[in-house]
Length: 271
Image (cartoon, rainbow, N blue to C red; front, top):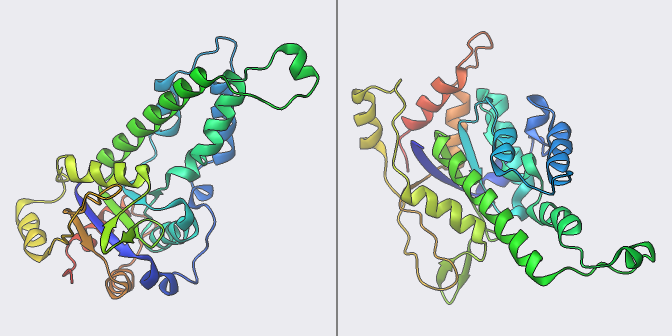
């Protein structure tokens, strides 16, 4: 990861109103095939989940230079923002739930297959499913570990991280900011922990120019529920997004158009 930003959901909502809230990946990959392949990997004769196979299937050679972090309740805004980036800059963004579905659905599929405690007779009688407590705990640990590693890997390999800050993702109790989402905490903590990697195309002179224009956003991470690690997040206003898109021209014949688009983003005078 090279740069991290945050946008305010309340402010960008109107800015993105004309953009589609559907999956951006439908334009670049067959997500239905990915979901079907995931089901095949979960239900197999060996009764074994291959974590490496899951990672390889969901992180193919397709370049996704931008990671969009958001609350599950803000999926529509995240999709609209992803379509804004794709339509204006040819940037394909990573939205986790659009690739592997909601984690609750994934967990339930695994539990129904591996943790069902009913006998064959009870299943035939159509009795309500009852999960084995110990198997359920183990399956949850495995699913969370697989997704945690995958998210960490994706954030590390993405060039730019953008967090959608909203009332759904950040809560305030007694004037203390934090989040109830372990996944948002994990993503922000990863950004706060991993090393910054400068793309080879950005020379040292441009690097110095970018660093001189960046004003880091700092907010206390207090110890009520999950804190919000955000020392590396820079603020992106609607005006900055508008300036970025209006001053950029997508050359469809240029294969790596997104790289020059991100270069322009990094050079913006941050507010």
